Structure formats: structure tokens, C-alpha cells
Image (tube, rainbow, N blue to C red; front, side):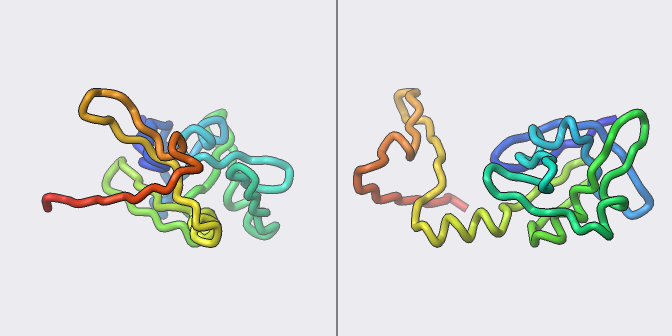
Length: 140
């Protein structure tokens, strides 16, 4: 069985493990692709940001089951203040507060891309060094 994780602008299908609490468990080999985080000796890391796992929670959050090593991502997300919501077999993960905070402090907008009317892809990073004004709207 699989479930869908919506995170970082991507849709990822991963293996499913359920528990009595309905927590989101992600196999360690699928963690980086699904969430951007990876396990290192210093803890869970997202790029240069590393968060040590509390020693008293490590055994609760990392488990061997079904011949795989699993990580209880929803409990970890709660600890770091990352919002998440579940609808059936689909989980949507909000932005990581520390990453969002760093972006606000640096006043540098996160990179994104749009498809122009002629089909070309325009990335915000392509305009680095130029002044940019963004206008957005929505029909709803």
C-alpha cells in the first residue's frame, strides 16, 4: 500500500505504514525524496539545517518494521512546528518554520518558476541582481 505526500511543491508516492495513532511514518530511504529531510549522525537535516532528535524520543520515532527502517515524520513535524494535515491516504506538509523564518530575515524570496505564454520557463533566480516587482491575483 502507498500514500501520497504533498511537500515542497512536489507530489510523492511513498510506502505506507499505519499505527494506532494514525501517524505519518516514512521509510528512511524515501524520506529525502518525500520531505527534503534526511537522517545524519547529527539528526534530521534539511540542507544545512539539522535538528537533533530528542534522546528520549529516538526509539519512538525510528522503528524497524516490515524489513524497513521507518521514521515517524508527523511527530517530528509537531516538534519543529511544521503544520501538516491528512485526508485519507494524502498528507500535505506545510513549510518548515525555521526555513520560512530564515527567508523572512534575509528578505530573499524563495525561488519558483512559471511557464510563460510562449511556453518558456521563467525562474525567479534567473532575475537575480535585477529589481523585480511581482503582481499576483486569483479568480476565486
